[in-house]
Amino acid sequence: MSKVVYTKNAPEAIGPYSQAIVTSNLVFTSGQIPIDPSCGQIVATDIQAQTEQACKNVGEVLKAAGTSFDKVVKTVCFLHNISDFAQFNEVYAKYFVSKPARSCVAVKDLPKGALVEIEAIAEI
Image 1 (cartoon, rainbow, N blue to C red):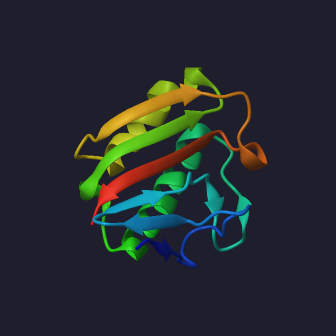
Image 2: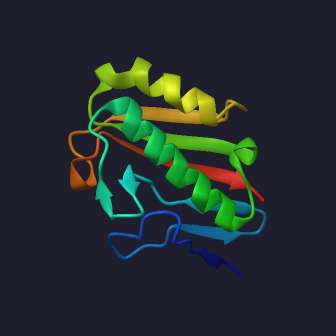
Image 3: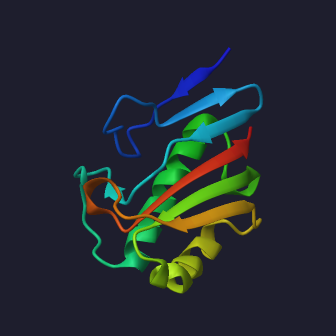
């Protein structure tokens, strides 16, 4: 049976979805954009600061699910501009030190005008 994950330390879902779902021994996070959960808005304006906030949000969801960054096995990352790839990687590498499998693509638009969105699959 699946379990819905919720934490007030990460942004509220902005649509009809959960922050994450736990099933068996895996957690699947929804994509986390760089919303500051204390104010409900994107505060950061550059790719590095937005990546930092998105990673923090992923971390809070993982924590609420009973796991952590070192248990992540796969991420999917969306960038508004692929030219931000190197700067994104600098910040991403500080959090995902176990180097999970990853897909990273550029997309036309992200919710709320975000520059980055990150989702993760982790073991519990």
